[in-house]
Amino acid sequence: MTDRLPGFNTLAIHAGAAPDAATGARATPIYQTTSFVFGDVDHAASLFGLQAFGNIYTRITNPTNAVLEERIAALEGGTAALAVASGHAAEFLTMHALMQPGDEFVASNKLYGGSINQFNHSYKNFGWSVAWAENDDPASFEAAITPRTKAIFCESIANPGGVITDIAALSQIAKKHNIPLVADNTMATPYLIRPLEHGADIIVHSATKFLGGHGNSIGGLIVDGGSFQWAGDARYPMMSQPRPEYSGMVLAETFGNFGFAIACRVLGLRDLGPALSPFNAFLILNGIETLPLRMQRHSDNALTVAKHLSTHPAVSWVSYPGLESDRYHQLARRYTPNGAGAVFTFGLKGGYEAGVKLVSNLQLFSHLANIGDTRSLIIHPASTTHRQLTDAQKTAAGAGPDVVRLSIGLEDPADLIEDLDAALGS
Ligand SMILES: *Cc1c(COP(=O)(O)O)cnc(C)c1O
Image (cartoon, rainbow, N blue to C red; front, side, top):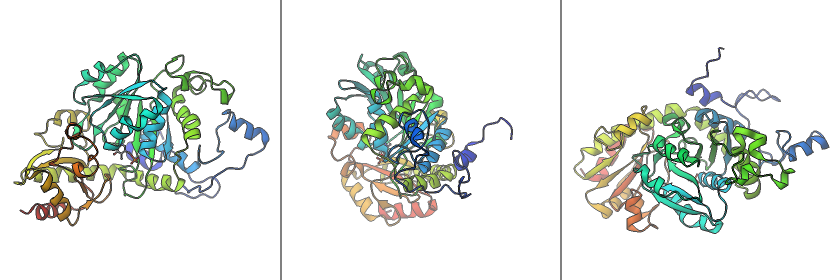
């Protein structure tokens, strides 16, 4: 082998993994154990003091999860990663490492509905407040920044679909104000967009979606881009101040460019506890092995279906950046040249009632609240995921009453089109 870095397809299969040292098992084993035997008392002491890397207890580290962590760090081009119980846990632990009571962050208004809830309501219990900015207007992010702002949060391809974020523009603002840019890369996955290359500092994932890819496991990931300088920055005490529970260790100094990932693990995961089951880590690893193949097929199928719907008489508009007529097409060509992903929205001329009827009539599409399955999925956000929002919030989040969201799976596109046509009554 030369010094050349392996390609994306190779990393998706091999990064972080090796034949099992004890048994030779080629697939990554599921280390389904709560705890790990210490070599001796000194070994135990060095593990607890963070002087040695190793396993103590699966809430904090586990060898199956470690392979998943190394793999996603390699695919995103980060310095380290942390596997957690869900995408929401990844967002929460990220914010826990960045924010103190009374702090603020600026978030894009085009987000997964669950993130909007988490930010607006549950975060209040921690004294964290969110300021909303218009995803397509980078200046609105800058205008919302105050001296208490500790982060900017966006999605690379935004939920419920069809929005491409200008990550580089947001990164310029974040860098100007010396705050980290956090990108939720769930919808794109690193196959379509690698946000660190466009200036993001931290990535969060719901691995539940395309990374796992088969609709069978909830999981989340945090990737440390290694780009933000925490050391000496008193605004970020979790990384920059001495930790009493680790004999005064300063994580950003001891761990350098992966100090953020360590803080999320040894402070966040240790104390708040949303650990990923090794069994789920195994399933998500299996999913990632075929990520490049699946994401390409998801995107190709989505483009075929979007083109069909854009000429359908019952459809008033289709929002898919892969379509040349789409307002995000230029951004899509720049950020996601391989394809614009699986998820998109369209509008029904018949409004709310037509949306309810469509989801009830489909045979092949599953009506459920998820994306990123091999199976094609449909949801009418106004009557489900976004129903708790006000009408204005719904429309701002791209989930007005006439909007239907599809997550196109890996079936034959002709079958998907036939199902949609039949249910739309054409
Ligand atoms: C699903 C999702 C989440 C939340 O992830 P869970 O694994 O369901 O907790 C966060 N962000 C985006 C973009 C999502 O699609």
